[in-house]
Image 1 (cartoon, one colour):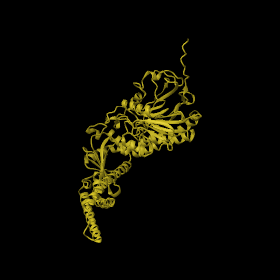
Image 2 (spheres, one colour):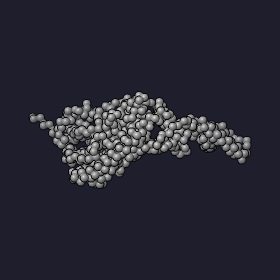
Image 3 (cartoon, rainbow, N blue to C red):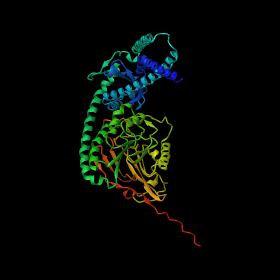
Image 4 (cartoon, helix red, strand yellow):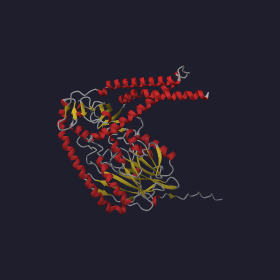
Amino acid sequence: MRARLLGFLGRWAVYGVLTAIAALPILLEQSIERASFEDRLGTFPVQVSLAHNGFTTLDTGLVGKLYWERTGVGGFGAAVRSTGPPEAGGTLTSYVAPDFVQANAAFIDDPGDVAKVYGSELRSQVLSLLLVTELVAGVGGGLVGAWLFSGASAHPRGRRLAIRVITSTVVVTSSAVLAAALFTRWDGNVEVGDRFDMPGVEELSFSSQQTREVAQQVQPFIEKNSARIAERSESYRETANASFAEQLDLHIDDLTPREGERVLLQEADSQGSQVGTKVRAELYPLLVEALGEDAVMLRVIAGDVTSNGTVAEKDYVKREVDALPDVPLVAVKGDHDSDDTVEQLRDDGAQAPDLEVLDVDGLAVTGAADPAFKALFGGLITNPSGVSETETGQRLREVVDEDAEGAVQVVLHQPRAAAAYLGITSLNDPSLDTTDPTVPTDDGIPDVPAGTVSIGHLHDVDGPWVIWNTDSDEVTWTVVSQLGTSGGVEENPTFNRFSTPFSVPLKDVTMQLAYLNPETGLQTGYARIVIGTDGEVSIEDRVDVGLPGGMPRVVPRVEPAAPSS
């Protein structure tokens, strides 16, 4: 019985491998045809697939196609097809409005970056599809072959081998011929028809004269503004670097952690700002050197890392993660991020908790993904999960109450989620404004988990507020910080005023240093670093919070007096 089973398994393996080899040409061709994913290119919702016609193509639908004479390995290019109107406006005029064109041109400042990311994603799609179908073909074909040829053959062994080789060769050749025929008939192989070259721009052409005329009209506008944006961004960066070095020298004594303290660096809403990220990446090494190599123990981002949650923003996400190397990063999904953003963060070494408690360098850290998605310019908000921000905060509180011991560092995007986590109606609760930051008081708020709560979304700084936990025999506290935007991004854009990834920040770029006792996880103070819209840096004085040294205070329990006789 065992010998028969081993023989069957051996035949299954052999015929499985032969089937997988025979099917490889057809399955590879079909994987190339079927590889696709959905994304947003600027404000366009698009579907991205492969093509083999010598071009990378953007099909806008209503106003024709844009051809970029650039392909990758094997001559494959991307076919980017608009699946709906721009989320910025939703009307036909939105396609050709100069402001819209400028926004998208700035968003895709270098098409080579987008092409590289799209090529990587499509290659991954092809390989994944091929692997799955090859496994299915191998397992199925192996079973069929092992069953059909389970009996003893009447042919000598040498002849049997020759028959199998000939059969395999014929099958593989037939598969390759069929795959070639399918590939030839594939829509992605159809030659491009009439093209109208864009004067002065190599490798760029359009499918219609009307579209080219629109592009020619807005091209000087785009070039002029792109040059102005680049000049202003460079001036902003140079001013910020010089100003930060000067301010750091003046404030380093106040910024340096005291004995027994380390720093939690708090950020929110960088929102795809290439300029903001580049400036911070240049300033952070100076800050770390001044504070001490091990002073910063954790960096958190309270959502909205990207502007649009796209596959094309992969390179930006990596630059944001690498802005402060060698320091653990915890970031949560905001409503401008997507599942793609979360995957990109994790691929680049960041942690993105969603209703789970992590141990990061001895600190308990948690967070929850924002359930909603807001398109670029806020034109469309969707929430397919059906879970509200309030329910998200309540769920996180249940997780913390069950899984966390001691203080916990909480990262959330929406203020509504934070309020629900804290068990209050909103962060406008009057009780938050009546407490002293260093003197325990009964604030009327039932005890909450001790630690910190970092919040984003509003792009404006508020707080921090100290909630005192005085309902037990140990007094602790929770510091709630409404963070600003670390990208200097305008949160209420209009077509007359909007942020792009490559433009100078329209709002103050802010970061907050929270000082913690790493043993207790309790906050002892904070200080803010602010980069103004003119690039000038200000470092605010440190403010103390909580009890000295970040140590809880034990309240002696008073036993009731024994009744007198």
